[in-house]
Length: 102
Image (tube, rainbow, N blue to C red; front, side, top):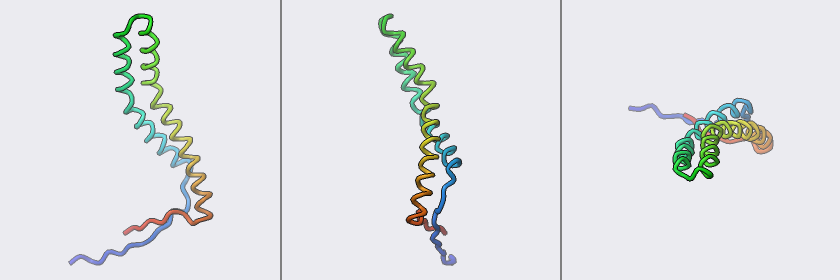
């Protein structure tokens, strides 16, 4: 016989902006890694183009393969911190998000 489960409602009143920013920077950076194979494929396709077009396409593609994860991480950090600050302001007015935990 299982004991009855008791559920409790908890409220998220505040989110630490720096902690959320770090988490989202890492998550967005990892998501940016997903795009690397596509940019490397574009680099390969660019290598098959005529010489005048090849250099621009290959440089653009390879550059994006390197910088997209970094750009995504920076965006994740900035918007994570901004989102947490906005959440904290709104949570003061309406009380935050309620979650039910066991």
